Length: 92
Image 1 (cartoon, rainbow, N blue to C red):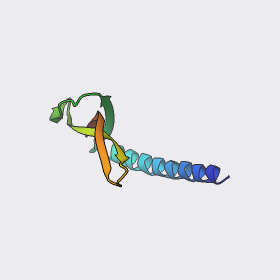
Image 2: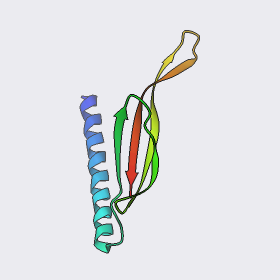
Image 3: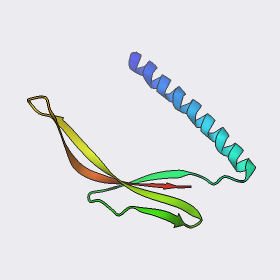
Image 4: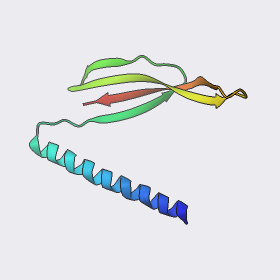
């Protein structure tokens, strides 16, 4: 029963955030001065080149982010290794 309550609380929190974000985007669109801001992630096995600059009237930034898998050794130290890469695209 507690799993259902926590799931419900998370859903309510996301609904509130979505409503707040939608209202702020609508207000900015009504003003006519703001562009959309969007973020998209792409998954790769090797690192891809990043980029920062203009692309089709938007300023975009591409960041290379490592995906790490960490384990704890028998002596209590943490050991991490890179298992993949994320290329995060942010445009505004």
